[in-house]
Amino acid sequence: MINEKVIIAGFGGQGVMLMGQLLSYAATNKDINTLWFPSYGPETRGGTANCSVTISEDLVNSPVISTPDSIIIMNKPSLEKFQPKLKKGGNLFLNTTLVKDVVVRDDVKVYGINANTIAKDLGNVKVANMVILGAYLAVTKIFTEEEVLEILKQKFTGEKANLIEINRAALEAGRKAI
Image 1 (tube, one colour):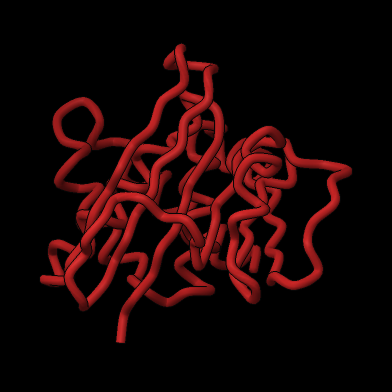
Image 2 (cartoon, rainbow, N blue to C red; image 1 turned 45 degrees about the horizontal axis):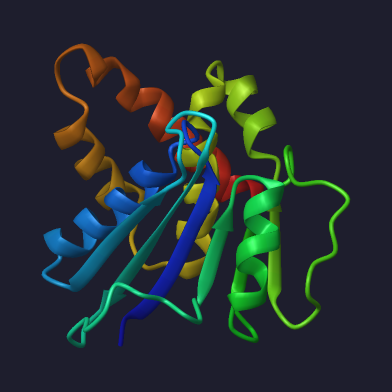
């Protein structure tokens, strides 16, 4: 039975919203109930951004997630804000390139992924979001990389179609980082 509540958070421009959309659209493609709820800070690029995604075989009643099963954290301010909400035994995915020297709870599973560095090694630091999403997919097994790539192929058309391969490589690198 699928019932996953995830909060994804970071700075604007880190691809936080895209990660949430990809998960939500993948659920829709599999006829699974889903809700994606974005939240932006006062700025777009560089300000705070987070989104909540609920994926469930049950009906989804509310966009508010008070106790997520997983959180994907792309920066330190987001860790400080969302770590207390993560359920006991939940999954904490940290972009350890930007989130260093922090105290994390000992009652959750922590997955540190050096996402920015891995993305830079792939040739484009902007795919750090796909690196950490690949790690998330590897742990939760909620969707396959191919299911997420199918959504990317629908979103990245025209001039952006050339970005599919680097995103594929980033998802794979995230999986291998786990």
